[in-house]
Length: 70
Picture (cartoon, rainbow, N blue to C red):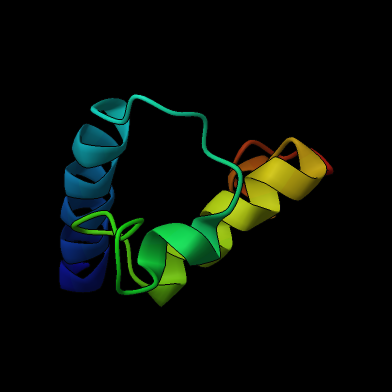
């Protein structure tokens, strides 16, 4: 249960920082990579979630939770 709490907080922090961007998100990996495109709170795991959403338009894990198919 603690893992879900920390994961949820990590996503909240990343989302807050992503909402501040003034450009469209085209790659989660670019947001996680050190340099000018790095967004605080976006690491490898969250970058993978962003890329999945950009590629598929949905998140398999969320769809499973909702008992649907991605």
